[in-house]
Length: 106
Image (cartoon, rainbow, N blue to C red):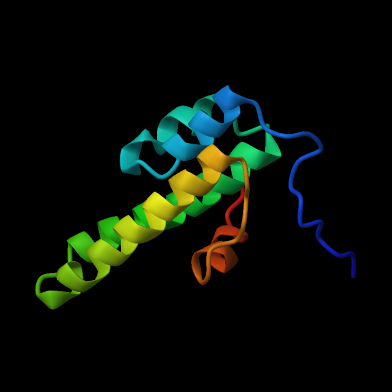
């Protein structure tokens, strides 16, 4: 079994790549990096995690009751943390989200 490198990219991401990765966490704006930068491993990592957060927010948005009030702030915190990490040029795996995101092939 090969170990996955902790660094997802060969070189530090450029400013435009960091901004595109940060857009992955802005709900429906995930489409922009999905169409433009999915061939770059750094952006692809953030796209996957952004898609998981988008799916969670859409699924919970349809559930009436307290679920939306509890999960929505949590998704917002994860999205904000992911965007900040993308802008800083790092690509850590979010707890829970990262495991599901690895199953997505974009």
